[in-house]
Each structure stands twice: as structure tokens, then as C-alpha cells.
Image 1 (cartoon, rainbow, N blue to C red):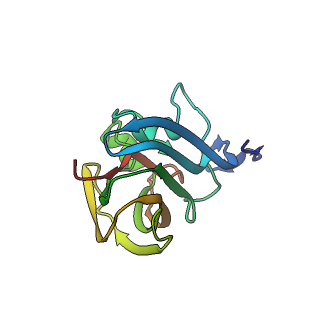
Image 2 (image 1 turned 135 degrees about the vertical axis):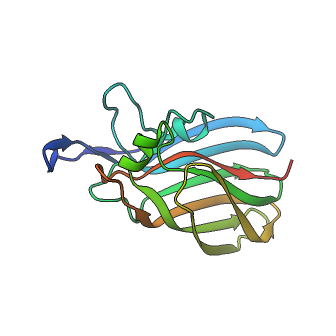
Length: 183
């Protein structure tokens, strides 16, 4: 069970924001054509505000009006999203909709990923492969092609290395994220 601690409200400008920090927040889904099961875990979550939720479910709901937003103080450098698989097909790329895609206003007011580290481990040989990638600052789908094939990925982790800062909030958000198995 993930342990959760509530951080004290921090004053940012004229507003207050409250963040929830946890060891991990996860969502597990049953199989699809490309894998037997998938778990998606995030290192922290911004708590719900003004009727919006920012949890791990938002990464895979195919709804551009929702987003996962990290929940630590500052821009979220070092925060991560991990995809875990059982019996997965070879992965070819990572697909991402960067930022909070709800509206142009929401996109610009919140932080977006700039540089990320992608770590992929294999179920078959246990090897860990890593790369860094710079995302463009737009809310459309971006494809991060992997420079190597991983036949049976066990774990794919995307770690925030730097961000495009938001105009109003330090929270960094991702609208959608998924592995592309080429099927």
C-alpha cells in the first residue's frame, strides 16, 4: 500500500496550493492485444481542485480535458511516470500529449515537460536501456521513437529532467501517455 503524506499548504504569489506526495500512486488495467496487464504508477499527484482531478487515471482516459499533474513543491523535476507490463509485445515508441490540454489557457498556465529520461527494462534479459529526449512545447501528440527494440518490456519509466514553466502555476502536467507496440 502506498504511504501518503500531505504537504503543508505553500503560499505561491497570492494563492495557496496543496500537494499530495506519495511513494507511488498506481492504476492497473487488464490485458489488451499488446500485453497481459499494465500498471501505470506516478511518483506524486496534485490533489483535486475546482472540480478537476489530476491523478494517474487521467494519463490513459483519452480525454484532453484531464491531465496528470505532479504534486511536489516546485516544477516537478525528478518526478516520474512508470508503465509496468506482464507479457508485453515489443515496444517501438512512447506517445505523449504534453501539458494540460484542456484549453490553450490551461496549457500555458501549467508547466510542461521539456527534457525527459526514458528508461526501459526487459522481461527477457533484464537489461536497462536509457535515453534522453527533448519534447516540443505544444499540446499535440508527440512520438518518441526508441532507438532500440525491447522484445518484452517489463518497465518503462519517464522521468522529468526539465520543464517549460507555466505562466501561473509550478505544477507540471501530462494529458496522455502510452507505449506504442506498433499494433
